[in-house]
Image 1 (tube, rainbow, N blue to C red):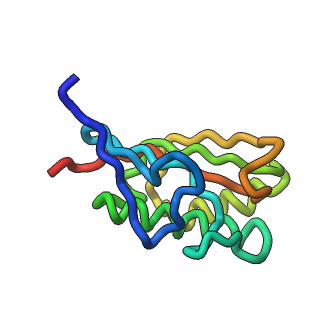
Image 2 (image 1 turned 45 degrees about the vertical axis):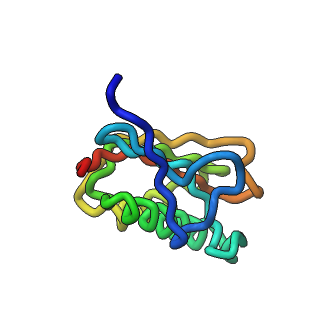
Amino acid sequence: MNAKLQTVSTDKAPAAIGPYSQAVRFGNLLFTSGQIPLDLNGEIVQGGIEEQTHQVFKNLQAVLAEAGANFSDVVKATVFIKDMNQFAAVNSIYADYFGDHKPARSTVEVARLPKDVFVEIELIVATVVE
């Protein structure tokens, strides 16, 4: 394989809290790490599922921008949610960020997420390689 891995990092999203990158580019694909609702200081945003979901999307937007991409370039999203009863709220906010673009998606209820947040989202994105 001729493509090589390139890490993507921005100070406009919270730093990784473990041994991983905010995103990795492989050829024309970008794989984001799961983003949780941390602010730039690494603190969990105050509020409920709505506030947390908006923060996750702000973090993802910053990582995508650093890679020269946006939500219209997303091919696949994976949403991890602590309580499937909150799916409608997450889905409504998700729709606001993606608009008419409808990438493939999986949504999974999980027992626990890092720092006990309510939602985590990761993306696979098709990008233009310069």
